[in-house]
Each structure stands twice: as structure tokens, then as C-alpha cells.
Image (cartoon, helix red, strand yellow):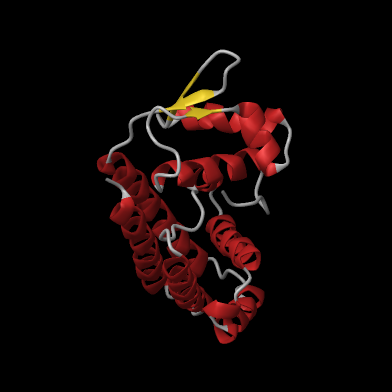
Length: 213
């Protein structure tokens, strides 16, 4: 699984486990250990327990008394419904960020630099951190606490393929998409920002569904 970078610990942990379930790394019936995941991610059991509670509320896992959790049976429609809700909310957030005059200068500069260096030289940890910072900056700029809260609960991180070439292709395309989103927001073009964010998350959804049997 991925390592932790930014966002509250429970959200980051939930997003990592959620992505592992969506991508098939964890399958229906697999046991998830509080202690095991805490050790793997280098955190205490408390944020893992909080993440498990959030994942159970989404229907992804079933908690077991003092024994971690069991992964539930999740079908393609469940995954699609989750991503479609994120598309609706985050596209709106991008449109609001554009209307609210979000400052994109620093994020664009880092994104341009990442594009110039190319996928083969990309540092995955840097990409993951910038990816989270771009999305959370858009949520914050939308200036709606409930909208931000819902999007944080839906967050699942980069939706890459399984092989290294597929992952690198995703990072490259995602960086280009981030630039288009940020440029639209910078230009105050709400509808273009909405469309670019919709296309970005739709492609991520299709990456996951490609491997979800």
C-alpha cells in the first residue's frame, strides 16, 4: 500500500485501505488487522480504528469485536456509485474554486515542473503529496465545509493500474489533467474547471473498473 503524507491520519488511512479494496488488493472475506495496518503505515491503532469505523459506515468492511475487520463483497456498481458521487461533488468544488478566485500559482508551478521532468523520473511520493494538495486546495477554495467533509470521506488517492507502465501512464496523464484543472480555475472559468475535473475523476474511475471483476 501507499505511505502517508498529508490530510488527517484517519482520512489518509481510510483512503489507502479503500483504494486497496477498490483495486482488488484486498478481496471479499479478507481479514484486516488493526495492529497489522498500524504497523505497516507507522501509526498508532487509534487512527486506524477511526478509519475502520468510517469504512464500515460506507459499507466496505464489517468490524469484528477486538479482531479488526472483514472486507465486504463489493461489486462494480458500488465502485461506480462511489466515483460518480465524487464526480458530482468535486466538479462543483472546482467550479466554485474558479468563481472564488483560488490562488493556483504555486500548485501550477509545481505541476509544470513535474510534467517537464517526465514520468520516468517522477518521485511517486512527491506526486502523491502534490495530488492531495491540489485536490484539498480545490475543496478549501470551494468554501463549503460540508462539501469539503463529504469529499474527504470519498477520497481514495491515485487510481492507477497494476503494472509499472500503467502507473507511470496514469501519473503522466493525471499531471496534465491537474494542469488543465488549475489553469481553468486560475482563469476563473467555472464551467471549464467543472468539465476538466469531471474528465479527471472519470478516467480514474475507469482505471479502477478495468481491473474490478
